[in-house]
Image (cartoon, rainbow over the protein chains, first blue to last red):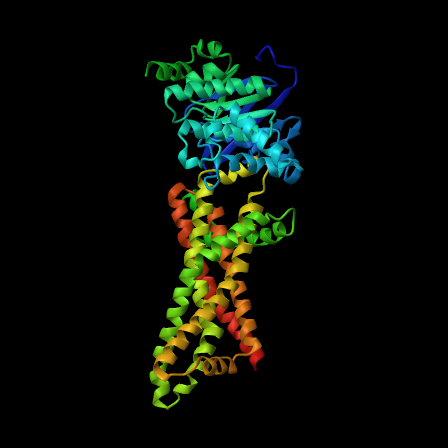
Length: 254
Length: 262
């Protein structure tokens, strides 16, 4: 199922993808379509291969078998400039933010911008940095270094760093992991604001059901290396499947 | 024997060692490919030259000064037995220019610079900062590895010259205090025996050592795994492997220079 804003052709199409690390089989024939304009949440327990899946989508890892097609291109067949051209259209927000800790916030944001967009003047660079910082509500941190920021601020700056290249697709890896409940709500709101303001399509990796409910147009539940259920939040959790029910109960009752 | 053990071509350790050599070779070749491809990160190169060169001046200077002074002090009794203490400036200058300055600079730099590069890149690897560059369509190898290896190759020969001057100063002070030799006489005698081959060999050595320290530190850090344990291991193995290779290079370069010396 796809949401109302979606168009016909998927912009991310994953078919029969397998991935193993030695004897550990992480993905066992995964299929998923993501349509333009929707937020798809990949939900599952830790260690079920959720992060591996989005790392395959952006070409950081290669699948053992199967096909991953993004914006009409087979990712595993791309390298060098062609892979970089695709990556410029995809924003990747890391679980631990992965901010460059030797650089200030301003330098973190300028770093991808000046290396991917040619002939920008200093005024244009400043304008774009300030604009994207304002989008995540952290203009005051511009001259701080990552070690001076809180966990939530780091997540926001990490998202801002990906937004500065105006991506078509956003991949969020555990955006609310390790944050307090109030900051989680703020991050969920930010993900929805990004979708509205930048017209992005997103895959959100999480094990947080509140995040899934607040940000996802569709939920894809990953268990034992395969998608067990796909649909809206209510559709997925209306299921009688024991493993889905126990996941829901654990999150909301615990 | 289990199925897993049968997968090894030789033994587990030998396979691992051969694979490491092969991966090191690929990394070495990639450096030259990336160094001549695309835009050079000059700003980062200058920053690394400053970090590797300028910030090592005090340590290299102090070590070089002590080395020159102690070597002179230790050599005096042997020469005094033959009444040949006037040869001290020549002896010390030959030792410093031909061997000590390059080796002292390289070993101190392997400890200070090699471990620092290994730890820094290792930490960037395990905190996904290198992956963050890749997904932003930035070539992390060009930005992180090429600049650090070039900076190390450029600055370590300069540090070696500095170490030579400071070492000779230490030697002069010791000779001046004990023999009363003037600065002019010391300089005349010190450079009497030094040839262009000696200077050239030292420069070649320093370039080779600088490159080795840079590439080994980068390789260990860039390929770090297993979290903080991996960072420590990268820093440690950067120093150990650099030092081992430096001594091997020393033997090879000395053999070649002796061949030309005739």
